[in-house]
Length: 313
Image (cartoon, rainbow, N blue to C red; front, side, top):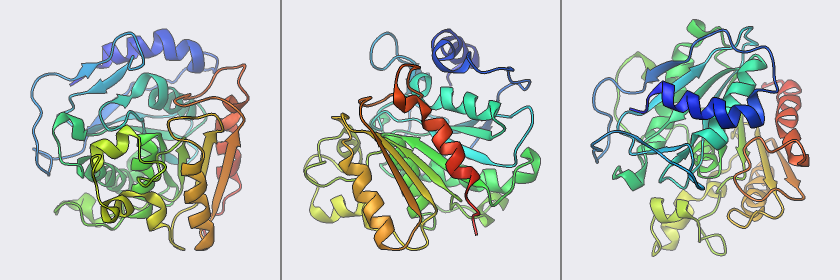
């Protein structure tokens, strides 16, 4: 398991400088971790050895070789009753904690949200392709089951994801009742359906011309048939009962071009589901919170305003 000290050191030294340190006051609560499964997690595949954290380069601060799926809990000083499960991206071969999930988790907690940072299993580590989706469903059920413990409303629990994490978050929001594993404890009585979803530069489609992502390669492979492409593309599963969805991307993103988000937005709207789409002029891919000189750095405010105006009825 990755040590809390190591990840906090990298976060404080870099992500904190870029995103979190500009917001005060600091959180008064220590981070907690909640294991997702009592014993071995379901699904095929086992990982041996310690978790790995990326060094200098594009994978800096990203974690892989995950054998113990869990949530890291960020408790706010003053809770606003809302919770967010956050899924970092990384193409299902690593999870971008430092650059994506950790900074927004810290920022949202400072704004009153109770945040759960998901550390999920990865197909590239040898797990079944369905393993991350099992972990996300289970996480949602645990959060809702323990809502009273965290001072959150069970009908104000959302999910947020970046890139491949956006695919994970979107799949969980659109197919919350899909039976991915067998479970019988008290958490399993709860719904895995998020009350809202926020998808940042998400992978949506596995079909051409969007069939070049690492996400597709890890989940269905390069030679998948059309049935598999459709089954794992988010827009396939849009329905009138889909939760409110916010989609944000950059026009110059060459890894997950805005067409991904546009296809999901159009599918949701066509089926009568509430959805909102924002496309910034520039920013590329993997921008996390963005920097102060980027217009897209205002997206957390857009998210908060969007949530604040929702009635969730």
